[in-house]
Image (cartoon, rainbow, N blue to C red; front, side, top):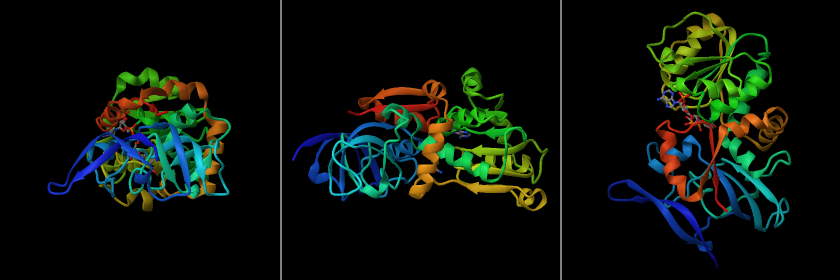
Length: 330
Ligand SMILES: NC(=O)c1ccc[n+]([C@@H]2O[C@H](COP(=O)([O-])OP(=O)(O)OC[C@H]3O[C@@H](n4cnc5c(N)ncnc54)[C@H](OP(=O)(O)O)[C@@H]3O)[C@@H](O)[C@H]2O)c1
């Protein structure tokens, strides 16, 4: 039995509060699974920030190791799908919520949850994409299924300076769309334009009380914010346009009206990355390999040492993180 370092969230039963810190765990602490992985890289997503701070009930089992994304090397495998030495990629499947996650030097997971690390990406690049970037790709695919083509009109991206937003801008601009980036950090306009945004707007223009219908502005949108922002966006989508909704950084509610749906034929697509089936994931990673400009990915990425991951998780829910963070675990 060997020990390893992990971030552990524990619940204080009496007060229902939680504590978080680094601990030494050993193999007996690992949960069920048929593949043991030496984790090399992870990343910090908004959900990891919610788990570490306890600001939303993301963690449903205590103690918990947070971290929803990983790249690592298989150490032992009882599965025919993977052999020791294979490089694997994990995104979601309840890891970091119901099953011990990726902010640890070792993990045991189910082989069904793992993909071979796509050959087009280094471990750092795969984690610079992570759940945020793969979700951005799922949202782009939803707009494509709606037949929103480059040149059809402007496409809005909210939460633009965040992880989903940054990768969504790079993908849409790379495909030839006219991208409008909505941000609360207008001082990041140069960064957003370097990813391909054609216009940058202040997110405050999307947070007022939503009207049933407003001036038609965008043919499509990728929304990481939710709440009044999503309701406002729906009221501003052009006839027969679509919104891919994937986030709740501004709220879980949707205080709007049915007017955009019944009077403009607007479509609202829901995006879930956590339990998306394997073929959908493989298709998204294939498209990321084909369509994501690696120089833009590098611009959106910053490295964090393992020891800094708790602070980084706190920072992301405070809106202080730009783009994507890669956590160097092993
Ligand atoms: N559906 C899924 O499967 C899935 C997968 C991944 C992520 N998500 C969700 O997508 C959202 C974004 O995730 P992320 O990892 O990209 O997080 P992130 O890096 O923190 O980005 C979120 C961005 O939203 C904006 N924002 C933050 N608080 C806001 C507020 N109160 N009102 C309006 N805008 C606000 C900020 O952008 P600006 O500073 O540019 O305004 C922030 O950078 C989160 O809600 C996350 O849970 C969902």
